[in-house]
Length: 349
Ligand SMILES: Nc1ncnc2c1ncn2[C@@H]1O[C@H](COP(=O)(O)OP(=O)(O)OP(=O)(O)O)[C@@H](O)[C@H]1O
Ligand SMILES: Cc1ncc(C[n+]2csc(CCOP(=O)(O)O)c2C)c(N)n1
Ligand SMILES: [Mg+2]
Image (cartoon, rainbow, N blue to C red; front, side, top):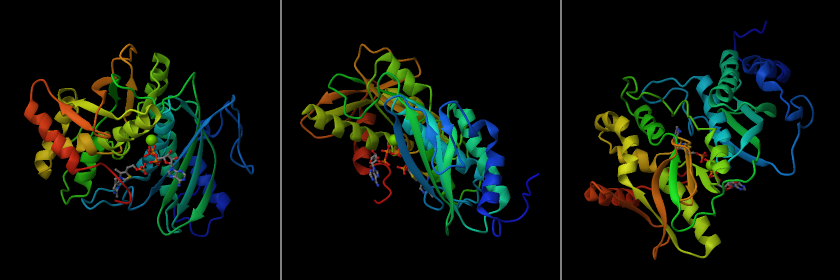
């Protein structure tokens, strides 16, 4: 039995790893795509020609807070869940499945053993709940730091093709599959002094839900363009416009359909009123929901849960994000003003 009372201080690296692995459980520690996993100098992964690789870091007090200003405590379980979710989302956004997970974890020495054990459980829960069934925790590194620093690196096996950012063309349809705005809405609540429970059906700030089936499904349906929404719909779609404009030699923009975006707005209305915030800012500029943005020509049939939210156009103005509404043109104009005012998430801005 592993002793979970006390802090990590005084343990050997092997003992720390043992606690993490006890939380993670057997399931996540081996699988058919990983020939040699944790324990050797490097992991050996099976691959057929080419593979995908992506990395993302979470740092305490910058990407999450142990105890938020509104006094909510963020469980270790959810910190790990989010670290996995944001990484497997990037592999999904290439239309692929995650095979390997590498975890570089630096912790203050007074971190409790219980925290680390629950962190391990969160890693396992994320793979299980999100459906990263092929993923194996194949290796990593442990270290000491002043603030918890979690770097996850993931590998993935591409399908017949990938979703890239530079293949959008005029006339293509723009789809979103997943949540929009809820993580940003929750963030505003956590950063406020409102200690009441979050009035949202789900806290995707703690437990993001990238739709992992959707990336491979989009490729299979014939889509070749997409990305995950980590920094906000408007900011991220501009990345597609820039990359695709450069590749095609055309000046590309997008028209977004305010009516199609409305369903994401409704669950956020009460929280918006409580914080005196316009929930459109969360839907258009909020990050960390990890929905899949997909762009495909009109003859591609995507599954029903891909919601068409706009169309790629050729414009005079670089990276133009325009809004239209058949029912409410005034609202469309207001969204345009909002988008100019706010630009989504940037670590350095
Ligand atoms: N330090 C770096 N060295 C080399 N390339 C980098 C570095 N930082 C970022 N990049 C590259 O820049 C691109 C954008 O990075 P970013 O971390 O914003 O990824 P993203 O997918 O847009 O966002 P997210 O990781 O939140 O989904 C990626 O292709 C990434 O590999
Ligand atoms: C304490 C705290 N402050 C701010 C935020 C918001 N935030 C952090 S990273 C990110 C975008 C994705 O990052 P990356 O591009 O690195 O994946 C956003 C919207 C947070 N979660 N916690
Ligand atoms: Mg991404």
